[in-house]
Length: 285
Image (tube, rainbow, N blue to C red):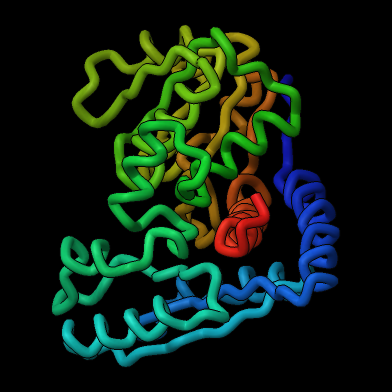
């Protein structure tokens, strides 16, 4: 029987370090600021926003929310985004996606200022992630996965890591981050043949496929570490991950729960990126 590894200790450890860093910045007359750009009032966006605002407030980061109407036209959205880009007080920008259908993400991602793009929306930061350029920003959720592995002293160097899912939100970026930690990475997806034969050989399994409780113990090798990035609602209306925790824990050495796992670390990573952006913009790194 494996160990449930929760996100809160990881988030708290990150926040403790950040609080001290923000105090040092404020002593220099600098206050880090995050501006959130949200179109409409999607429930999951609002839930994440509340968590982000609470986390930033506890650390001492200033925040602003720019709420735009659901029916905003592209030109108007771009004009608003450019204002945030140009706001000297704003160090980090978080834009909620996906957008309503009238907004073209393929255009907008080139508008956000890369140096303020703290969740890897800009192609510039995607390229920096590929190049292991520390001046860029990886997406917050994949970064949270790596922080959890480090916090719980899970070795990555030379280990076999399988990522289930190939999205630009989780699968591909977390694969790059694992490569940057010198893991040997395999990506599985909906077209992978005999997936359990691949995943059961892994030391580390990252699950982000978007299907409730799809991954059970037959996908998991003995003593593997399972990080569940999925968030779904089961038939009883309860939150659950992409992994069946009760089944997987029979073989896994460690597994993150849903809720209280990866998601609880993500807002701390967001805050970490805002502080990093602030330091870079003030030539303090």
